[in-house]
Length: 456
Image (cartoon, rainbow, N blue to C red; front, side):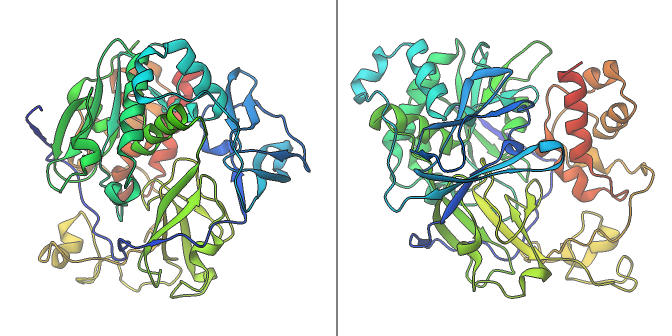
């Protein structure tokens, strides 16, 4: 194991409402949805099912015309009940009514000892066909991995430092054999190393410590030390022309289960967290599961006075109480809508507000273990960039965030490349948005820059 890599830049957002380690498994969703909007690079989606069709878990329902090898498949068995479109017939959701007993498409099964004999080509073919392949993300750009590319290495982050982040040990309990099988398959896709990063600050699950065939790394420090992009930067940085793949531990387990059991199992455990939840805890659901059953009769305030977020409060997105879980999300966050006006809220001293700026949140720094109830109020509107130097203090990477944002807005391609656009995606600079006194949508700016570079 390598030495501990100490991350000193960053900021922990200590939120109230962390999920207790209790699992509810009797509130499975009635419908699930696959949303092309969860995938940045689907530009020309082609639906290959019709309303009324019946599907099994693993049946292809969608592909991108630019790369028809990658299939997006049904996470459950059931009936296609709606193909929802928006303006200009943009595909928004494919909704499936879930069967009580899930049926699965059959794929080749292997024993643990057989996995070493599986060729790279055969493994790739079944991952592409089954719907597991989209779990593999390619850097730069943060898009679904290109099957034609050969990554110089593959990275897995074994911990999450986002606010109210779920406990990976609880999410993946009992999945050790599948995780190891997934690692064995991933090694076939790269001539380099499979890097697994774990936390040096907390107890680590044996699913990670006992994994073989990986380079194990320890990271210590505040958020975003758990972000795979930060880990890549400190282990094997991405240069122009490099390709690196990343995958979260759940995706590794899916690969292993596909190879050992011959099924696409899209069931998952998610955390429902936030101070507006009466009983923050874990629930069993499916990829794309409808979230209404997870929060019904479990909110402290009416639904119209809270914000339900698929994912965490930094990088997740707002969904309706009857919306659907994002493809890559492992939690639902519920916080209060900041709709009330707070007189002199930006200047009066208080211990109830968290701020990176000590001039505003000085009292909160006196109790580092204090939990906060942050709402959605930005306490200000978008204005010109203010030169504060604070972005660099929360970005543990050798990039200059403020200059990068301005280069993107100016559409200066050379400057974007020189300032590190190939190393980052939205989540790596999400803290900049949190501490930004100018109230810019910085994550949207990052994605705009990525799109400019990717499609130029």
